[in-house]
Amino acid sequence: MTAVHLGMPGLPTAPRGVGHLRGTESFPDAARHELRNGQLRANLGHATATIRGKRAGVVAEVPDWEQLRAAGKAIKAATMARLDEHLVELERQVTARGGTVHWARDANEANAIVTALVQATGTTEVVKVKSMATQEIGLNEALEAVGLDVFETDLAELIVQLGEDKPSHILVPAIHKNRAEIKEIFARTIPGVDPELTDDPRQLAMAARTHLRERFLRARVAVSGANFAVAETGTLSVVESEGNGRMCLTLPDTLITVMGIEKVVPTWTDLEVFLQLLPRSSTGERMNPYTSTWAGVTPGDGPQEFHLVLLDNGRTAVLADEVGREALHCIRCSACLNVCPVYERTGGHAYGSVYPGPIGAILSPQLTGVEDNASLPYASSLCGACYEVCPVAIDIPSILVHLRAEHVEAQEHPTAEALAFRGLAKAMSHPRLWHLAQRGARLGRLIARGKPTLPNVFPPPISGWTRSRDLPTPPTRTFVQQWTEEHGQ
Image (cartoon, rainbow, N blue to C red):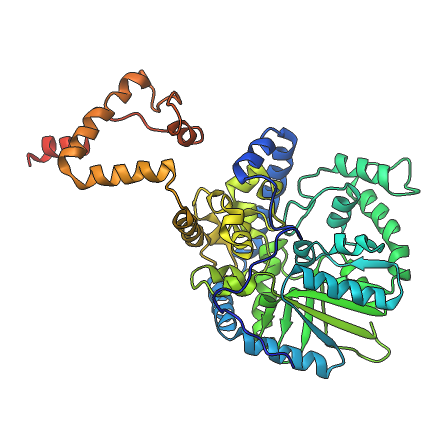
């Protein structure tokens, strides 16, 4: 039995140089490039609007939806408060049922564990169930580096893999591709594909099915993630829509599951709540087409060797933050991405992390350390739409503001923006200075020339702020002047 120490200050964040949590450029720079892609915006706009509509319809059918959200939030908060106990109980139950539990402090340890387990079987191929945790740690690259062939079996993940691309959405990794683009990828990369293949969705799905079927049948090792793990019984659960997960979870001799430590829930009763929240919030369905659960090893039924890798990779550091730890409540439904005006226009690649969108803007900086992803907390308009749709009511806007403050406080030298706001604060603290500033601001009306907003004609560093923000033209009268004229005081 392994003792765990969670939530302790100073424990490491996710290591650099491995995995997919850090981008090569800041969000503003990456977003500027993505915004030039009109096809990308069209693909995203159509897809997110469709998912939003489906979700709204099925959520409206549930009269106690807000009570379910509150229950999900409460369960997650209570679980995080005793996470160490639940993980130890999970390990005990998995072990008692014939499984083996491995603890991985970071991506390097997790990759080394899985690589050694696969190599011990003597196989050269691995089939995979869609897994955010394995993408986070760069498991595919680690396995391929030692000569193993890795096959993604989720349709969208397969598209991304064959296209030598990166996922851009938590639920629909290939959301940035349309049918014509997918058809081109399949025609170019799948051996023996029908030369008459069209972009009809059914034909594309059948081509992928034919491509994967042989790999399912000959696979000896599968790697999966987990949506949930029930501590009281040692049960793991994967929910999916295509059936590929069921194939991977039942056919191979060896199953290796990589799971973030925050995915545990205490009891089966708790799991019931999330199995109602997740499908409606993610795919707009009343229930998942495939919900697979397993506990350890059952002789003669399914994999005869089961390994569970419990992954930290910065999660303990997140747990130590009393405000930011709420990000660990996420159940990866992606509802926040589908309503976010920033994500809809830039896509997921601009975030530089396997976790894009609003949840990625708060989770990735905490897993890596805020300074390694300092631009992400600013990748939001703070409109609050993400909070409104989150099935476990994560207050993403408040955490974004919290992380922005953390970034500002970490600066050794004040930025130009910080100096400007300090000057504004001083002026607003002294009535005479404030009135002088108001009089000076009237000069802006000359620059505006009757338009409602000022043109971006300011020199640096002001131009950096106004480049992406509209600065209203100053009014002819201040509020104090209007009040005095109307009320005589």
